[in-house]
Image 1 (cartoon, helix red, strand yellow):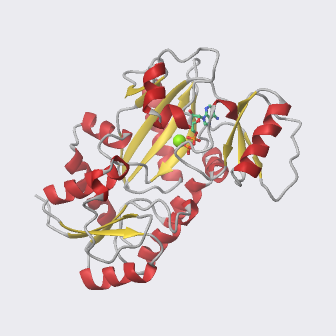
Image 2 (cartoon, rainbow, N blue to C red):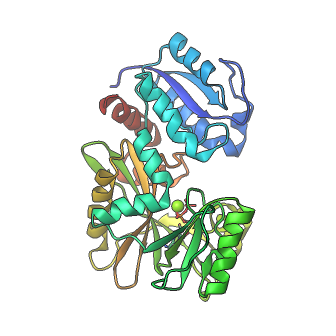
Length: 338
Ligand SMILES: Nc1ncnc2c1ncn2[C@@H]1O[C@H](COP(=O)(O)OP(=O)(O)O)[C@@H](O)[C@H]1O
Ligand SMILES: [Mg+2]
């Protein structure tokens, strides 16, 4: 049995609402499924949950903390004032006010937000990552002599496959420059170009602080998607239901992988989790080549935890029901201290 607690469910809101606003109407919308799922689990677990949608009013959040006096904040924020990179500042604020909270620390959020910085650290810890080049808007685009095509061009600090389409994979300098221009000028974002890793697309969820559990591996299957096109999780492949149906793109359990890859993946994910000092839960996006080489493509600190998302699906397979997962995350948030 767990102790009943006062929990503030902190999430992103596209607007400011007064404290105590119940978000009932918003929660009917599928876009709010994570908030709805976690809130329902908190209720089922018997916790006293207070909903707080954060737009840009830090003062009101502090008032909520002072007056509601939560035992812990369940931190679902991914942005502040609609800016992705400010998620770390929200966690910093909680840390400054010495309120226990769930999920990654500000430092891990800062590191994992930057796809190049993350890879530098993982490389230092001998975790295999694709070779990469950074292209900042403030600098002239200069192509390295070592550049090995094909590459995939991505925004340096984005998530959810924003800015990733089939045109992101380039096999000549002209299309590389074109895609960099698109990222810099259209998206107004810095870019990273990584060596393209051909292989299976896997998602590995991890739970824990000191003791780490690697959960069953998920996989994106590309069904009848044309073999000659890069099989990657583009924005459409992730989020466009009709597109997924048309090409038979599906997220499934990977099952047992050949050549001992499961053990390899488990070891790599544990090493990476420790190297980045991740807490509570995280998800690794991985590619495994036909030769069995395992590459970490991306590290997601505070990944999506709606009941239909990879973390919850993997937890369920491992024998952890959704409310149990939410309770575990709370316990891990409390245990790591502040
Ligand atoms: N170096 C790479 N090699 C092969 N595919 C890649 C590479 N980098 C990204 N991808 C593909 O693009 C998808 C999105 O890239 P990722 O770095 O995870 O960005 P996001 O933060 O938007 O999820 C990956 O899931 C993968 O399918
Ligand atoms: Mg990803």
